Structure formats: C-alpha cells, structure tokens
Image (cartoon, rainbow, N blue to C red; front, side, top):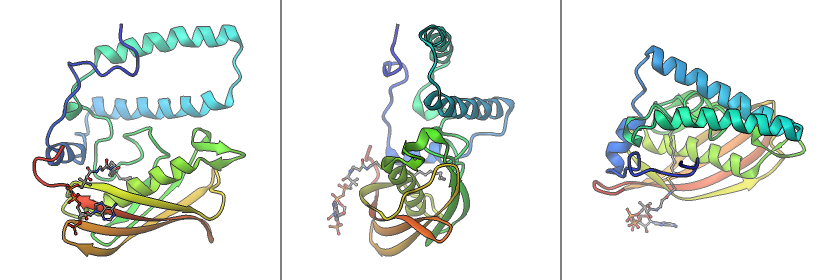
Length: 217
Ligand SMILES: CCCCCCCCCCCCCC(=O)SCCNC(=O)CCNC(=O)[C@H](O)C(C)(C)COP(=O)(O)OP(=O)(O)OC[C@H]1O[C@@H](n2cnc3c(N)ncnc32)[C@H](O)[C@@H]1OP(=O)(O)O
C-alpha cells in the first residue's frame, strides 16, 4: 500500500519545463469529467475548511479515517503521470483547479499588470482570523508567476520573492491582489505586488522571475 506522500514510479515524471508549462497552462477540455473533477476539488476545499473548525470525538475521527482511506484508494487507482493530470490546469483558473491556496478570481492579466481578488476560508488561517503568512506569499508567487509568463505564456521561475507584512490579512473578506512588471532585463522580470483589504495594505512583495531555458527541468 502506498502512503499519500508516495510518488510511484508509474506517475513520477520529469520533462522539459517548457513542455510541462504548455500542458499546465492549457485549460482542461470542458467535459463531464473535468466538470466533475472541479466539483470534487470544491468538496475537498470545503472539507479542508470543515476539518480545521471541528473537534471530532475519537470515534468520529476513526470513522473519518476509514472513509478517507477508502477515498484515497479510489484516487490512487485513477493516478496518471503529471503531464496528463487535470489538476492545476488552465491559464487563469487558479481558483477552481487547485486546492493549494484560496481561489483567485483573475480580473486582468497582460504583459505588464495582473489583478485578481479572493476570499479565503479558515483553512488559510494562521490564527485569530488572520491569513497564514505563507499563504500570503503563495498568493503573490502565483500572481507574479502568472504575470511573468505574460501573454506569450513563457515558462518562468521565481528566483526570489520578498514579502513585507504590513497589516493583518483577514479571513472571510474580499482581498484584492495586484502585480506589476517594473523592469525587464533579458530573461529577468522584476515584479512587485500588493494585497489589499479595501483601503488597507495587508502585504506587499518584490520578486525576480527568470524565464527558463530550453532543456531546463
Ligand atoms: C491564479 C491564476 C493563475 C493560474 C495560472 C497559475 C500560474 C502559476 C504560476 C506559478 C509560478 C510559480 C513559480 C515558482 O514558484 S517556481 C518554484 C520556485 N523557484 C525555483 O525553484 C527556482 C530554482 N532556481 C532555478 O531553477 C534557477 O536558479 C533558475 C532557473 C531560476 C535560474 O537559473 P539559470 O541557470 O537559468 O540562470 P542564472 O543562474 O544564470 O540566472 C539568471 C539571471 O538571474 C540572476 N540571478 C539569479 N539569482 C539571483 C538573485 N538571487 N538575485 C538577483 N539576480 C539573480 C543571474 O545573475 C542572472 O542574471 P544575468 O547575469 O543574466 O543578468
């Protein structure tokens, strides 16, 4: 039996970063299978929020563990290599096709500017109804990474990302995320971003993204 952290030889796969980016940024076809998978991810996300809010009894936890193990086995039987997966597919569907971070609704992206908004559930909380700092950074990394790809959808990697936390980032309220390309130097794009709650600046970040070269993993 595998554990949830195993990467079996059957599905582990490393290919050229440009090829993988092409696959990941191509939206999954709008089929009953894709639509059902999106509903599954929504339910997983709802589960995550419920999980962190609940204090189940020992009996209830044991019952849940048995049910989850059965669900996991069903998923393991449907495992496919990364370049065939539905997960995290799409140009702008940062929200519906992944469960790594609060769903981002993208309003605009071109070669210079990215704008999106989100409402985070309790799974994204550090404590006291404030977003975990790592989640703030993953939001910036995604927004800035998508902006670095630009309209040509070039594959780019984060070289550095520095986040300054200015105010608490609230859970359960609309947050606006913006990013701007400040400078382009060959393969390098220097990008800055801000996370707002209304007129309050929650966090800002500076980053450098570098376009990958052909043949890089
Ligand atoms: C929400 C809606 C969106 C949905 C879509 C989702 C999109 C998702 C997007 C998600 C996105 C998520 C993205 C992620 O999370 S990517 C994952 C996190 N990042 C990484 O793992 C990157 C690891 N590093 C590398 O792979 C290599 O280092 C790379 C490939 C980046 C560069 O190695 P390479 O051998 O190719 O290049 P180079 O070493 O010649 O360097 C190149 C240039 O950079 C300059 N340099 C290097 N380091 C620094 C430094 N610290 N400060 C200042 N400058 C620095 C260097 O001097 C040189 O400049 P120049 O001499 O050419 O002038």
